[in-house]
Picture (cartoon, rainbow, N blue to C red):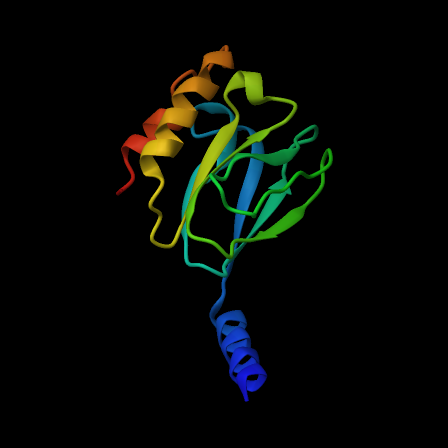
Length: 143
């Protein structure tokens, strides 16, 4: 009986889950080396497909708190990531991270905003451009 209930719950979550797209771009709306959108809010169980619209981009996670959802793509690879745990996730383009090519995903009722902000402030020290991109994104989010 327990397994039947778990199977039903899994299929309900799978049916309700959405897949969003984030494009990896050289420029967008006056911003250079960017993800579009650079901030996304999801429900637990939703997926994100990262799409390289320009050549040379790689997405990978750099912050996920103590959550297990981590990813690392390959150059020019479309990669889908499912988010099964609430929280903030920060990611970058491995090839253009120093240029501030990074973004934020908030999943569900995230409780780690302060930790994400602290990580972002330290992480941004390596940026040579778009120096405050992450903290600007996080400053606009709800806790």
